[in-house]
Image (tube, rainbow, N blue to C red; front, top):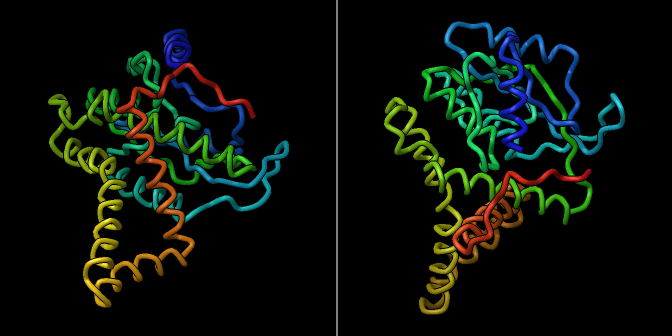
Length: 259
């Protein structure tokens, strides 16, 4: 995929802008204009659209709300990062760039969108979020298909961090960028920290008498919240992606989901 994307960008050197998108998403009518408005701002090199997740896309119509608490939180983070022009996790389904800036993804990187954002920051260009430049993406209908999609994306994220360090060790980046990226690199260890916390609570429960059951009971009770269950599911998938990478089952840019 990265080779095709790079060839497409190279072939449009004489154009003012390129929109990178996916075949299975639906853009709002004014999304492109909003993206171009932001791309025209001084110092901006990459603009990310606003994702909205739905249950189904039928032609030009969207059906159902597929948003999760994680999606809303991620949107809030992108808005905050955009203020400083340092959006990290851009949406490859809706990106605008100028071909003349020479932003190209590295071959073999499954998260080509993250790599494009890193390339822009290396050149001193801002990576921003275009509020209101909405595109809609349908969640996979079956739990199994959704789990497979989430795992594929997690593996791509882990591969980028492992191969690039998320940009943490890149001295061409400003110190502020590297500190922000350190938080994303640290996220890969959160699943194992959570697992250690649960194991510690279980140990206390077995060895600490009645009082030792309190922390374990609180952890188990928290699973009654749908938000906590959703977070636990994402952490489990991220943890598996890290273990898969260590075991050699790594992400590749040689895929295209069939939907």
